[in-house]
Length: 108
Image 1 (spheres, rainbow, N blue to C red):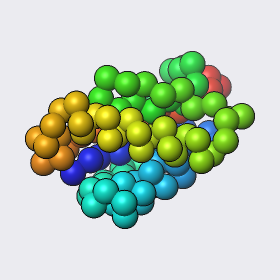
Image 2: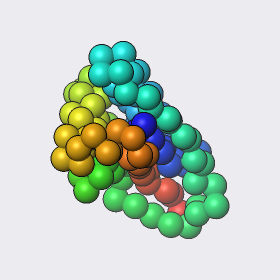
Image 3: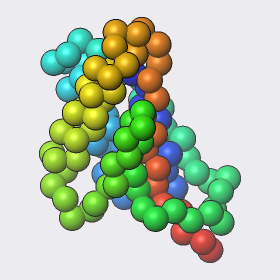
Image 4: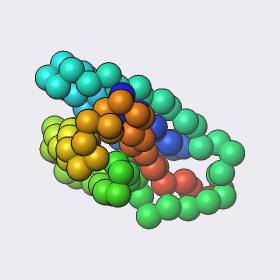
């Protein structure tokens, strides 16, 4: 089973969250992979800052560009998840593989 963990702040656009759910649906429907999408609000770390939203799948990090087409981001998440599964073999499908989506925080 693949696990997608979405870390977000209250000020972020929901594009990364929507893309994670869309990618999970594609992986379930087309590749018969069970996907767990977990949403974590980043309310505890309001003072921290990041370079921008990013999606981490295994050792690969995808920067989320708000100007990039939505479908392109979804396809990139799906490809990265499949590459991660192929790299780690069938064991990666039996054990949870975590996908982190990191959103930037804004210092108040």
